[in-house]
Image 1 (cartoon, one colour):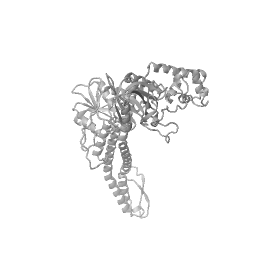
Image 2 (cartoon, rainbow, N blue to C red; image 1 turned 90 degrees about the horizontal axis):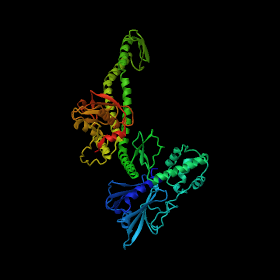
Image 3 (cartoon, helix red, strand yellow; image 1 turned 180 degrees about the horizontal axis):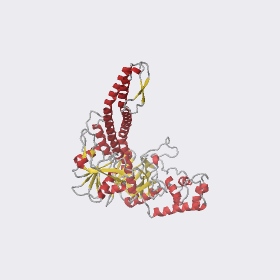
Image 4 (cartoon, rainbow, N blue to C red; image 1 turned 45 degrees about the horizontal axis):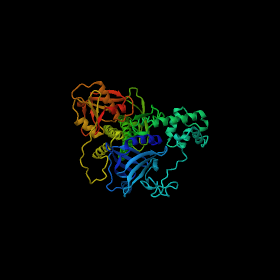
Amino acid sequence: MPFDGFVINSLIKELKNTLINTRINKIYQSDSDELIIKLKNSTKNNILLISVNSNYPHICLTNEQKENPLTPPMFCMLLRKHIQNGKIVDINQVEFERIIIFTIESYDELGNRCFKELIVEIMGKHSNIILVDGNSKKIIDSIKRIPLNISRQRQVLPGLKYINPPSQGKINIFDCNFENFLNKISEFKKTEPVYKVLYKSFQGVSPIVAKEICLRLNINFDEHIENINQNHLKQIWLQFTAIKKDLDSYNIFPNIVSEINNKKYIDFSSLDLKIYNEKIFKKLFFNSINDTIKHYYYEKAKYEKIRQKSSNLKKLISTKLDSLYNKLQKQKEELLIAKDADKYKLYGELILANLYKISKGMNEIEVENYYDENLSKITIPLDVRLEPNENSQYYFKKYNKFKNALKKISTQIEETKKEIEYLENVLTSIENADDVQIIEDIKDELIQQNIFKRKNKSSKKAKQNISLPNKYLSSDGFIIEAGKNNRQNDYLTLKASSKNDIWFHTKEIPGSHVVIKTNGLDVPKSTIIEAAKIAAYHSKARYSSNVPVDYTLIKFVKKPSGAKPGMVIYDNYKTIYVTPDEEDIKKLQTQRK
């Protein structure tokens, strides 16, 4: 649960420094649950984004431009009436809850000064934005109305007095002394785990922070509260006190947490949480909690769009790959049978040599194998319905059939392997995609290959320029480019490179084409290693160690006639083993298109 009381507390300090005495210039409602507020003062303009989306509620200053509906929703119109051109005079947190109050000075229709409160509740699916009259505390309206049939505990409707969300009996840890702390904890069952007691007792404390407090004090967070002695309870309270001092002095460590072997962000915090073991997790630190929030939710939204755009493609390709894997297995089984062709020829010849021993109705015959120097015995199955000579002809026909099939099946296996290689490359490109345009490029490619059908067959998509590869600058000053899909791979390798540029690809692993632009110069070993790491990163082996990467000159890379996009052959290559590191690679990146 990223948005806890600690994050809110740190964010408000930053917002106060930036937004106090700024005027509300424009208000937009970019979505049913999202506001964009443009703010202006004498020196700088700011954009405040407030989202109460059930899955990703958040608030931060942003520079992201969003499309707005031509007709503003009613709540947006109401906000424009009441607070547009108003001035933000205060920003506060309600105790240590996930509630932010913007106090806005404005003027009514008669020109009288008045105050409004824009209240933002960041509470998961219950998140809301509520406009309240500053004097009467009555609700003017909210982005989500909560009538009686939705909540019997608390209604949010125009005309009702605003009351805070139910506290669930929690108290503000920073407003209580040690005695209050002990009294609150004593309300719980003796068998309740200590970390649950902490987050159920105190406002704004998430389960992760509760576990973190225990970890810092070497207390098992699952330990029953009855087993936590007075000294440890005192240490827990003092730990909260120490955090309070850090928050008050803005001694924070804004960071985003992700798994080492996964680009997906899983959490963010204003605290440096040691509970995220550095062997499993990595942290990306920022200068401010606002930048942390902005980056976290921007990436979340981006990958959610990519996931939505790519889900059908991934499903289609995975289904086709499963079918091809089964097809290849059957072809290999047929190949094994076909390789027995010489055995059937031998059966036919041995039956002819022993016709005098065979009569119709026999189901097998044991004869000497005169092709074997030891004249070993061999048992030949017979069809009881056939004459001896007909059994011989049956095996000769089977020999000819499998002899012809052997070459055909071998060719089919190679074709199936190429199809699998191509689709595995496409799937890797989709899984590594970090931009929606890459998915669109891949979709166009699959349409051209008759793998994916356009929904509207009658409409032809306007011709688009192919997006360009990722560009990097090596530590020695050489440009390195990496394709993001097969169309880019073809463009980079076959059209945009010179014959003495150096080409890289993971060995027998789906991945991107990577090229060092040499400009006719000798390339240092350090740049070779960096390019190989980039190739490993843009492959299925992104999170692996000691990844084999082949490299050769562009002039030794060829595209066979009729080969699918991105498919090439190469020779005169060397192999290098590298371990890709995402942070090192990002430092080399110069631009993305």
